[in-house]
Image (cartoon, helix red, strand yellow):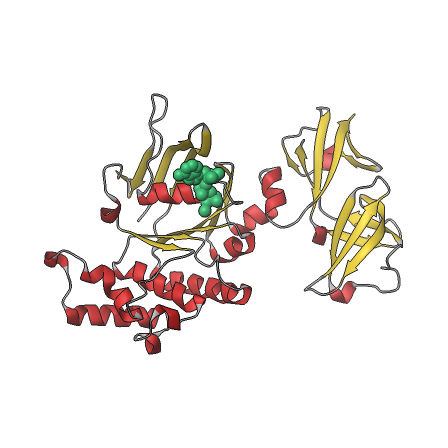
Length: 361
Ligand code: ADP
Ligand code: MG
């Protein structure tokens, strides 16, 4: 089922939790709402579910459409949504089997499946979440990851048209999170239920989703594929929030961008909001993996900097440097390119900026 959100605003007192959001979610898509804590993700999810109403007003005409049909007057339980929350309290006194069967058992008699049908349906879901052998256990006899899989099966039992997941793996250990993330992605490829996945974890969003909606202060900053939001961030916020970034403050002066001792022809700048004719303040961003440390300059723009710290315990070597202007600079170097001869604390090296992006400051 496709979902459309038009002019959705939600204020609490004078505070804008969601600020004029417009969004289309395609049938069968897995969309991530990604943003820092307090950016309005859960509020938006609750509005889709019908747990919260968007603000009404003369200038506002908010609409939530499911397959093109307004659902403002459709109650939560009739919207066909399945929910999984971070702390989804399974029924403690019920087995895994009974937890999953619950939504089917409480249906009005006319639409309630027979107990044979319920057994079959729960069996299919247990297969799907790969917990066949644990059907008779109680929630306290499961690990956190298993509990969230049961919560998901419980949400899916009533065959929702939309699955809403609010930080479902937020309370789990790092390794379990990684496993469940991949598991959920695979599951979605099998069942294709339209899904909205809320997270503040950018890696999780990039790995799991077909499309990432980056939110900040109740607004959508960018709406794009994981590749797009990572490689071509639309705003400085997205640049900083997704992946790490070094920032240099500078100015455009006579068609040159000047950042302390670093100067770049403004015609060569990649980014948005600047035009090479205008003068003014700009910010230059460089990702740590897009910087090369060299003994000498090599013709591409860069700065001299002193190595302050070297962290080798990780997938790459992270090197912290300080430019002569006093700016901190983080650089990631592949282990096989880490040169112990000259990459030493206290050494001055040339940091060549292989890819830069600018935004008007
Ligand atoms: P997120 O899920 O991105 O962390 P939320 O949507 O939960 O953000 O909240 C967005 C903002 O709205 C937060 O600052 C939060 O404190 C505020 N907020 C959410 N719900 C309420 C409420 N019922 N009353 C008052 N403020 C709220
Ligand atoms: Mg939230």
